[in-house]
Amino acid sequence: MRSAPTILHLDMDAFFAAVEQAAKPSLRGKPVVVGGLGNRGVVATASYEARVHGVHSAMATAHARRLCPNAAYLIPRFGVYRQISEIVMALLAEVSPLIEPLSLDEAFVDLEAGELAGDPRAVAVGLRSRIRAATGLTASVGLAGSKLLAKIASEQAKPDGLVVVRPGSERALLDPLPVRTLWGVGPATAEHLRKAGILTVAEIAQAGEAELVRLLGKAHGTSLHAMAAGLDNRPVVADRDVKSISVEDTFDSDLHDRAHVRYEIDRLADRCVQRLRGAGRSGRTVVVKVRRYDFSTLTRSETLRAPTDDLSVVRETARRLLEAVDTTGGVRLLGVGVAGLADFTQEDLFAQHAGAQEPGEEIVPELPAAPPPQPEQVHRWLPGQDVVHEEFGAGWVQGSGVGRVTVRFEVPSDTAPGRVRTFPVDDPALAHAEPLPLVPPGGQSPPATSPKSWSGGSSGPGPERGTSMS
View (cartoon, rainbow, N blue to C red):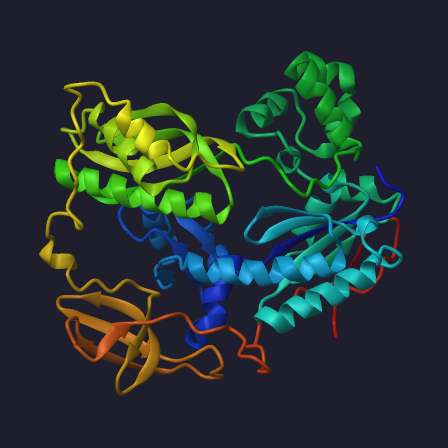
């Protein structure tokens, strides 16, 4: 536990949804939900306007539609989110070389490793301002002497705020919070504590270590008691060891055609290798995950003789593993992963692997370049996709059906909603397009939602709260 608030936790506000609002002027200030749109879709992120209706991440999209039917439901655009994440992480690197990314939109920063630790609050104010100027988006920041408190502080700061936990104010922040706030307290642990009459962090601290050990066991009880007291000595770790890289898809309807299942495995293997190469890694173990129509989930794996990032090797191995799984009843989810990661590859592994094939062993045939034809998806336009029209220019898909597609023509720099037009789904003048930057070079950031208002400074022993205003 440090004597100064030099650990910074940054979390972009409703990141995916905020990106979509910044890119689409007609959605600013309105409920937006990003995630899977099919019957089995799951919410990835909801804007704050949608959250007031009870919508939250990991909720079934079908349930979210019942809670907030008037929201804009959009597919994720992960390429855009990654580009913006790179901008944010580069700005964090200007503050300190010691950064621990947790996801695309969240990271810890150790200010003591940089040259600006003398005034952490000024660093945080400047950082949030630069992120706003570079991306058009808002971020919330917590500053504290430990990772635990910095993370909790950034949650308290949301949206678009800054909370500084000064030494001596830790208990004022922690005591009134529910037990689920602490790391490691899930539904089962929370229920154990509830039965013992423990509902808040203050009550955890009052219970004492011995009682927590009796309730939860030695390791968990001791750790929880320390956290309730605000004690956390974990360092910011720049390079966390990733143990595996994987991708998976849940399908709107069960896949029954074997050729289509094989095609999807090929497609997932391609995506997995792209992520593997993007991380500069290779791996020895290929894993295939299959969730069948009855929700039973099977995994099959094979360990190669040496690490590889060769697409043909991963694809062939994934196909072979799939052959060992019965999919005749239908498949609702498929996944492909690579584990046993390393920083080097065996260049001739595929040739060695093929040469080691036993006589008479079945060779997995080459698969078609596309799945079995599905006429209803020949011209597929999904809500949120970027498009361009030869006459009307850039826009995005609002919806489609019965042979028509509705497009709103607007760009991020617009200050008013764009016009809406409807076209046949096979209109030759309409095409998919690359996303436009949220902030053009030298341009103005799009307007953001109102920042969270805190009184500047602290009137008592609690954490200092305030917004960074330029």
